[in-house]
Length: 194
Image (tube, rainbow, N blue to C red):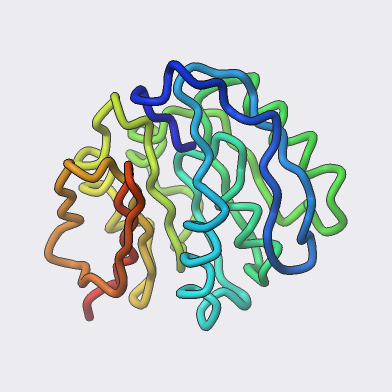
């Protein structure tokens, strides 16, 4: 979802694009929603280069979907399916419309729900890849990460985006695989330990 209160003075762009795979170049609308900050093209390019070996056939869970840039990029690059969870009804409508117009977009399922509440009942099986990029001001990392065990497979990958100054610990079940950052954010990819 990528909402960052620190960016409230700047308006978000009207669209971001899928940068790789079968839907490369497809524009994804970005609503004028308070704090909505899609993950940058550069960060997504780096992340998906890291993930490329595990993307084919993967099940992806995008817990704060926003524009859908992470979950739809995963599908574009070979993931089998993606579950996009978004609290905002207007953003959900936009995500559903985008998925419907993409060839093969039925691989994306959009659920309108609050991510922490959604994670209380693991009804959708286990995922190979989870994206956690909550609204920065809401500070939901610890609550969400504590609920992931029943949702992830044995060799899952976990992507976490956070402000530079916020230290994130996904717990003993994860080992840091790769990390990077920008002027404002830290992005880290973890691998399921054991």
